[in-house]
Length: 413
Image 1 (tube, helix red, strand yellow):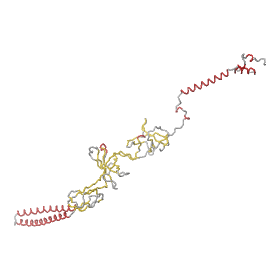
Image 2 (tube, rainbow, N blue to C red):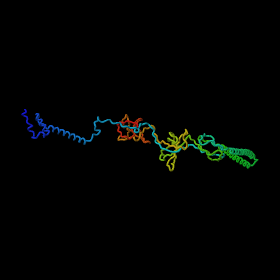
Image 3 (cartoon, rainbow, N blue to C red):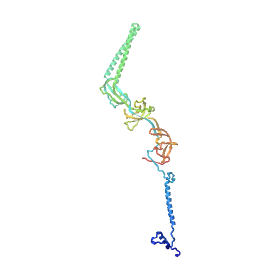
Image 4 (cartoon, rainbow, N blue to C red):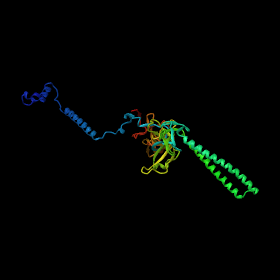
């Protein structure tokens, strides 16, 4: 068999072994061991397959770079993660509760007593006593000023004496008139005598009437020398001291009744047509913090104040506790319109689409669309809801970008 093998060594190139290449060395070794010559095409094929695979991967990468990434909605439903609930804080939602809605007009002004009496002397004389000072309480009929009555007593006595004298003269003249009439009837005395007696009687009667009036005036002067309080109240000021001599009309003191006060409120003239007597007024007074007082419009000035263009509105306020004093400054809210037990939401909670007005309510952590029927707007940015909401509903009040069905979580921060 060795004879049939080709002599590869003899066919080797005529060059020394030390100059052989690696391929020639391998071919010589295979020939000496009876192996067939090594073929190169399988290796070339493998190299081509590797190169083709590399080119295919490179082309795929270039194509993937040109194709845009798939949208979130294109992903399979089973691969979409559940949406994270949106956090809504306590300032972005509110619970709907019945409330009283009011439309008001604001008025400002001082307080003044409803009743104030400036007491002046009705008769002249020396002031004997002034028992009260400013701030003292006084009841109706209490003596507040006492004027000396000695002179007035003498004047009364003189007037009574003159009256009595004239009365005696009148009685005598009337008796003479009776006798004269009898004589004239018998024809003893002339008729002219009767006329004179009658004239004398008439004059005495007139004098008696005048003197009786003078007695009454003297009695009245003596009575008015003792000045009393016309009503229950408080002494506001005192103008005289004991020993002063006063004449008729001299101011003595002033008394105020603080059981009820009036607020002289200035209202915009544009609101004059909306204000009516009998409207309720919520009054807050400087100096009495944390309190409000119930008032009522009692009358309205018919003419606006020049320069300010405001109307004076008189508001009556009960002051049984005596907390309110004249001169205090107050702020009032006149209630023009009132709606008790109404449901309202902030205007920011009301939304509108093609189907109409609606709000977003939160039920069991889910935002739901709730159709509503809005009513009139009220102060404070509120809109009355006539239909569609119930007490206790939780309404989204902030203008958040929410869709019905979105999950939310209420937080407090």
